[in-house]
Image (cartoon, rainbow over all chains, first blue to last red; front, side, top):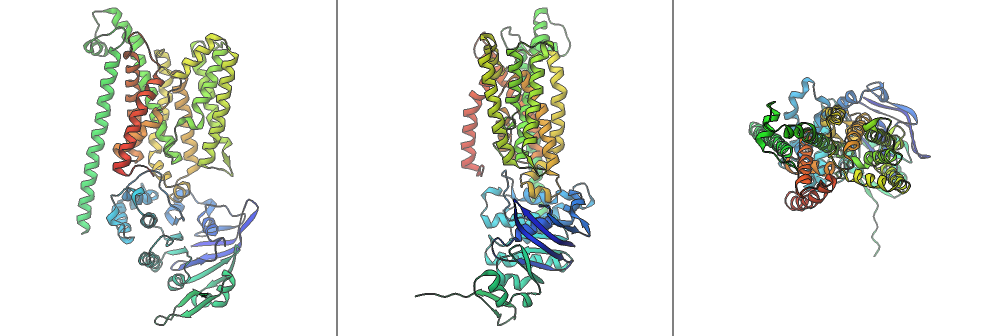
Length: 257
Length: 352
């Protein structure tokens, strides 16, 4: 649904994304991992159309992003950036309702209330609906931002570290929401730092290092001790989970007495 | 359970609708009352009944009073309403497009640019447009200054909020220096005129001026109402607004032009009236919350009420003196605003 073809992004002389080709298919959760500064957010921004690629192109439904009207693109894909401040003290429901803006004046507008209520419930912020946004905790604000993105009701979701501020229950909640979207025919790209979380929920994992794509594939194939130790420049252990068999990824830890 | 939520939501919306109607009814009533009181008050005082008779087209017993009303008071009241409405609406627009509660039309250099033009006209005694010369030049330079701030702050086809505000700071500094230079160059009487122009006043308003400002103010108001809904999305940030389908660059350009036109027109006649553009949207937000669909029209009415009241005060507080209106708005409004901010910060969470 989104197709990055040979994309490079150069900002102020430094090459942040280096000739990456990555295809996000309908029905899959694709998790993007990599060390700090690997270019994950930059690649996501390029795939969202925020940064024009200096080489290559990003296609949404086969058409170059540059040729999409803003509103039409907003009905196809929603984006959750890392930071989502709200400038004025809107209440939570109003913030989530803003996610419905692209559908204003279309028949889908009639579903606004239901979609917003569902998004509030799915992200577990229903009880905060009347609170002013600045009075929420960081994790609550992060879930409100996610609710807004879900309310946009787009088949494609691009989520930049949606779990960064969340406790473990809500991390699982967010990724099962992503899985559900994919199962319903959507396409979800998620940037994550937690490799075990990535391995557990991803259909495919893409590993970025130094702006370049070093591996893509199913978690079992990509999450190997060798590859990850190399990419993260730190020894990494990978072992199958005793019950599910999914890879569990941990850094090698030594406690020097 | 879902039905329960729907009912609760319905009730909340009903409640808000009542509140919105009450606010607009209250503002409209205040507008009418202040305008009529203002038309009757002044050195040549006259009872409200006379004002009402004149407004309904009846002749007054005192022909002099009728003359005062129609040629001095009414245009002055209308001008104060127009200028106040424009400043209020433009404040809401600026704060909305910049997603910054500190923004006001001054940050993009409208007022200081207009001041340079007005000073040039005063110092060099330009008269090629007759009585319209000073406001005409002020309008042009205000517009040029704002558009150049916009153009200078663009890079890679995008305008960053911070770069625009900083460019505004630089341009304001240059404009301030030019005004200082012109005051230095000008003679005694020019200096005096400049000082009073900068203090702001709607004292000299006449119908021809009103007819010039009216369409420009109306244009600004229409643009403001048309963009109100998109301003909500801009408070999420440029990137987020773009993801939601807003053409952020176009909205910002349109809004900047509207503010430039409206405020240049207002300032060119009334001089620099600080504070209205900053405060009115804040007051509305305290009462109604930040949604721009209500904020923009309420700021329009609120600005009009505030400036008309300030003008009434300016003319009546000290007998036989016409105080500068900019001074009145800041002197009375400043402490009041501070008190309100303190109060809402402790009770409602206030601003982040």
